[in-house]
Image 1 (tube, helix red, strand yellow):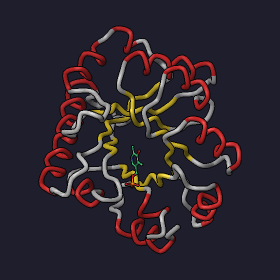
Image 2: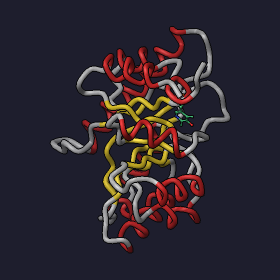
Image 3: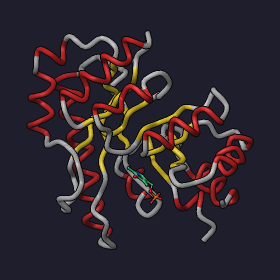
Image 4: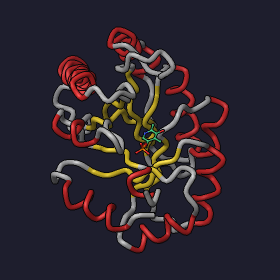
Length: 219
Ligand SMILES: *Cc1c(COP(=O)(O)O)cnc(C)c1O
């Protein structure tokens, strides 16, 4: 846990960028400590771990699910999750809508794009996203709100490559905004940037940085 580092990150963020503190693998006590510093937005990538932490911690925490989400597990987090970052298919979006409706709520979602060179990372192409957004089934969904895009850059020390990938995500965001979300001010988030690349992500237009190890490990 590195509270000083947390404050230096928070102090360095431009006003339009929010921090998702990625607390995966970190104990409840660390999250409590950050909560006492006033932080409210936390990110987790495993359903069971998120459920457990949600039960044990204050109810006004905004929980963001940032990992790959299986359809059959949506029901466990639908009662409380604030935002799901990594939506990469229409069937998943339909399931999130269904479970949100059961709980009388709306769940904010981001479409995940494949911008990295590694093929292990999940995500859509621009074409696939356009197909999803043009699908009649998408247009009937009332309990999800698509608020933007999310992506992860290649794990590399080549800053230029990371920059190009973030620029690509930004241009995907602009294109979708123009073609599908014109005059819709709720489509506004670009979730990109982690411990090693968040400064570049902010330069390239990030509005949500997802930072874990810089805050939670005491290196
Ligand atoms: C773990 C994780 C992060 C945070 O990574 P750090 O390098 O620890 O900052 C961000 N986004 C996703 C999707 C993650 O799984």
